[in-house]
Picture 1 (spheres, rainbow, N blue to C red):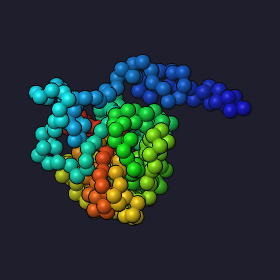
Picture 2: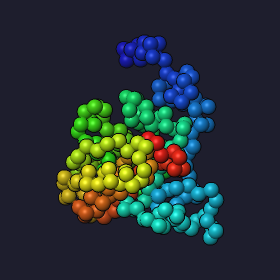
Picture 3: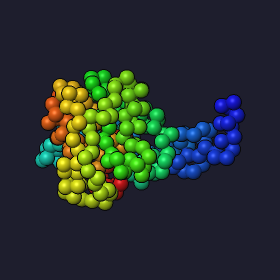
Length: 247
C-alpha cells in the first residue's frame, strides 16, 4: 500500500532536483548538474574555523594554520567545520530547508556533515542545536538546527541535548546585517537551562550556516559559562567570501 501511495504522490508531485528543476529518480536527489554546482569544502583550511585556503601552508599541508580573522579575534568556540560553501547554488538548498518547508533533505545533509569532522563526532558527548525562540518556532513549524542534530545523532550515535540551551528573547533576522550588528543582535539571547547537562562535556553546536560566527560565539559563551569542557561548531554550510553573507 505504501508503494501505491508513493507512486501516486510521484505522479502528482514528481521528484525534481531542487537546484536545476529537472526530473530525478527520487525525492531528495540531485541531478548531475546540481551535484557539480555545489562546492564541497576540504583541506587545506584554517584549523580553527574551517575557512578553506587556496594553497597549503608554507610549512606543509599537515601543519596547523589559522586564518587572519581567527588570529586577530579567536572565536569563543573551539573549532568549526562545514561540508559546503554557502554560495548562489547551495543557498537554494538551505533556504528551501530553512524557510520553504522542505525537511526531506535532512538525512543527506547529515551525511555530508558527518564526513567533515568524524574525529570530533567520535569524541563528542552531545550535539546541541542552536535554539529558536518559541515565536519563530511557531511560525516556522520546526527548528532546522534541531532536525540536523537529530539526523546527525541517528547517523553517529551521539545523543542530542535539545532542551539545555534555550533562547530567552526573540531577535530580528540576522540577514543582511554587519558582523557588529549581528553580535549586538544576539547579545544575551541565549541561556543554559540545565547546566548539569553540559558540565564537563564535549559538545558540538549544530546550526545550518556559519556566516560571521556571532550566533555560535553567543551560544559557546553560555555553554562554557555553564561548565562545558569544549564547544565545537558544525554547520551545513559556511560563508567563504564576505559577499556571500546574505542569509
